Image 1 (cartoon, each protein chain N blue to C red):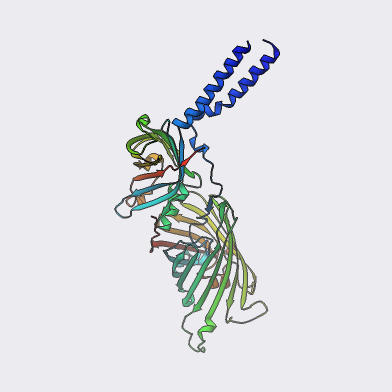
Image 2: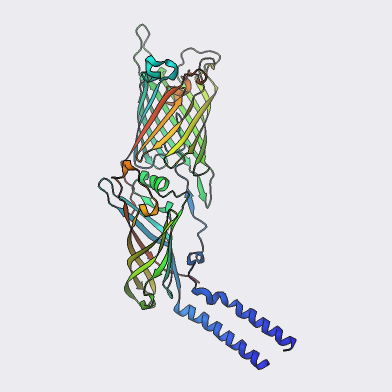
Length: 191
Length: 304
């Protein structure tokens, strides 16, 4: 009986230690709080250009799971008035303060995160803006330098899909789709 | 199995359970929650009012750096002046003004009103801005100082007066807060100094003190209810002059803000509406008016 118990204990301990070991070697959670998210829309009368340099992004290298969260109020515009309208009229940032992406890097197993390299990737997941969640797919690349993965992606979103309405009066001023670019250097490792 | 063994087994199970969180790291549901949130983020509160004026008074809102705000203000005659005057629309008092945001916290402005052909200039300085989050501050505090000069020709038979006699000053402190997405409120004590007053009496003083209050309540994304009131504390003959009260709505159309309102004043600068309002709401002497604000971005903010 005692022998059996010892055996069970050993098995448990070994498997637990092994689990910890595997987690630390194969899967790292890397993140940043200073990711860059920009958006750009071209329209006949006025181009809209904004940048946010405080996006939070996290990637679990083992599974390719990725999440990005960005504060709507953190977007800076060239024109003060645009920034006000963006927050007040379009994104309603008091009510919906953040946009969140949650998804996966496709074919993550092909990426070797421990060696330098560059991979063209497809990221699939759901993007929530203005309290509306929609599935999206983005093309991008992961560049690994000194074991630090940097994620770069670009995609278009339609304002209509996210219930962001443009008043008729300025409809010809504002493009109905915007291009969003993400650039996150995931240089922190979660302990 | 004896008791000691049972105990050991239990211990083992507990120990192994301790490892479960480690093993379940593979979960991906809330990766973001694993990151310690920054508790030092500060958020400056903006857009307490749609425009830099409530109705008559300056609001706690600033127009932004590099922004030129063209403001066209109209006050028509009283509604009770009858159909022959189209309920006041035949008479209009007008101010054309330009405000410019030198920095996000400093605005300068000039204007000219038809009433007494008055020129005015102002400086508006936000001393503190309301902040949420780390080192939060509950209110915004703004200082406004201005000068007004009556440039109307002297009526025949009267001696010409030096410009200093036709000049007035005002100083104002605005303390206001955006309480929620919808509701903002401010108090604005104000002092108007007139270099020369028509006829000095017990009640008429060069200095007029008033306590102003203003609010905004958003009805929709682009439409808001606005109201402001100034209670004159001293310096004016209250048997002649009334406290100005304005009630209206803001309509924002992207680039323009229209403020449509009713008030009992026809004056369009601080000196004029505080010390020259004689109309009474109770008698139907209500002036319809509108403010039109059109902003132009003169200097762009570098974002890259």
